[in-house]
Length: 78
Image (cartoon, rainbow, N blue to C red):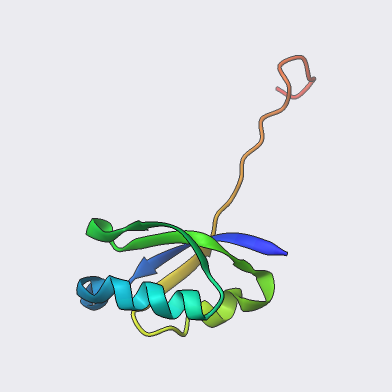
């Protein structure tokens, strides 16, 4: 099952972010967005491969993207 993730690129790897993206794609990441100026990559990957992305050279952190769902307006939740 795919999981959406946000990947932070290490400061010393931002200049070669395209290489990091290619390596992540080789690890199974389906890239959705590359925010070059701030060194952030978003995408989705099979849950079995999430932890392996953290070992890619130039990756500082891999974080799952959380979702928020509000209750319907007429619910009893306050």
